[in-house]
Image (tube, rainbow over the protein chains, first blue to last red):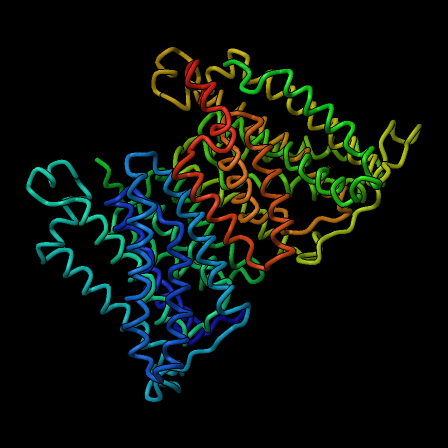
Length: 290
Length: 324
C-alpha cells in the first residue's frame, strides 16, 4: 500500500477534529462524573438531540449561528429536568445505578427523537462563507471542517479558563476532590451539581450542532458517539479532565489511522486501544482518585 | 439464602408452562407459544447473567458476546461436522465458551465496577466487529442460515424437533435444568461467597478466599448458560446474524434483569418475559415503543431498585431479613 504525505496529513486532521469533538463531549461527561459520580449514558442522546434541534432551528430561523446558541440552551434545560427529577433521588447509590438510570433516560430521548424526526437523515448546510474547501500544504480540505477544529479548540480553551480561573471553576475543581469540605465552606453542592450537569449536557449539544454540517444528522449518531465518549472517559481515568483530553486526541487518531491501515476492521482500533490501556493501567491514563 | 419464591409457586408456574401449549390453537394462537419459547430461551441467558451481575455484583455489558458465540458455534458445527443434531452443536459451543470465557474473564475480572462494564463491552464489540466485517467467514451482516435441528444420538437415532411444540418443550427443559443448576450454585457455600464478594470483596479475601478464582467460576457459569441460550435461539430462528452479538442486546439483558429484580434468579426471567411480551404488544401499536420501556425502567430504578419481583415480595422480605 502506497501512503502519501497528503493521506497522512488528511488522516491526522480528520483524527484531530474527531478528537477535539470528543474532547467537548467527553469533557462534559468527565466533569459530570468527577463531580456527581454519575456516568451519564444519556450524554450521546443529548448530543444527538442537539444535532436534530440544530437542524430544525437552522431551518426555521435561517441562521446556523442562532441554532448553535439556542439548541444547547434547550438541551441544557432538559439536562436540568433529568438531574432535578431523576438523578437527585439517586445520589449516594453505587455509580452503576446512575449508569442504568441514564441508560433508561437515553432510551426515552432516543425514541422521542425518532418519534418527532423519524428515521430520516438530514443535512445541515454551514454558513455560505464556511462552505467549500481551503487549500494548504498540498491538500484541499473542507473549510467547515477546519472551522469545527478551531471552534472546538476555542470551546475547550474557554472551558479550561472557566475551570482554572473563575470562582465557580474553583468550586467545581474542589467538588471533584472533596464534597464535604466544599459544603463546610458554605457552597450549596446541590446547586453546583445541577449547574455542572446542565453545563455538561449543553456542551454535548454544542458538539452535536457543530458537527451536524460535517456529518449530517442521523438516527445512529447518539449511539455512535456515546461508546467513543465513554471509552475516552474510561481510558482517561474516570473523572480526570486532563486524562479525557489525552484520551480523546489519542482515540481520534486511532480511529482515523485504523481506517487507513486496518481496512475493513477499522472500528476495532478504538477497542484495541481501550483494552490495551485498561490492561496496562487498570485505572486509566491519569488516575486522580488518590 | 432462602428460596426467594416459594417452591409451591415455582411448581405451579412450571405446571402452567408445561400445560400451556395444549391451549393452542383453540384458546389462543400459536403466536403465544412462539413468544413463550423465546422468553424461555432468553431466560436461560438471563439466569446465567444473574449469577455474575446479580449475585457477584459484576455488571457486564458484554453478555451478548456469549449469546452470539453460541449462535455462530451452532452455525459452524452444522457446516464443519455436517450434523443437524443439537447436542454436538452444544458441545462445540460450550468448548468455545470455555476458551473465550477463560480469556475474556481472565482480563476482565482484574477490574471491577464501571471498568468491568467497559472492558466486557470492549471484548464483546471485538466479536461483533469480527462477525460483521469478516464477511467471507460469517456472511457479515447477512448472517448464516441454519438447517432445522434434530435431537438424539448423532448418526444413530435422531428426531427432528417439531415447531412450535417440540421446540417449546425443549426450551422449557433447558430452562428448568438451567434454573436447577443456578439454584444449586447460589444455595451452595460457593453461592454465599459470591454474595459476600458483592457486598465486601476485601473481607472475603481477608478470610483467605481466592476472590479472582471465585469470580472466574461465576463468570464461566454465565458464559456457559449464555452460549446454551445462543445455540437454542439461533437454531430456533434457523438464523444467526451479528445482531446477536451487538452491545444493545447486552443492554437489553441489563434492562430485563434490573426490571425483574437482580440477584433473585426468578426476577430477571420475569423481567425478560415482561419486556419481550410488552415489547411485542407495544411494537404493534407504535414504532417507538422503547419510550414506554425506557420510562418504566427509569421508574423501576427510582422507586423499586430490587425490581418488580422485589416490589411484589416486599412485605415478605420485611418480615425476614433483606435477601438482596
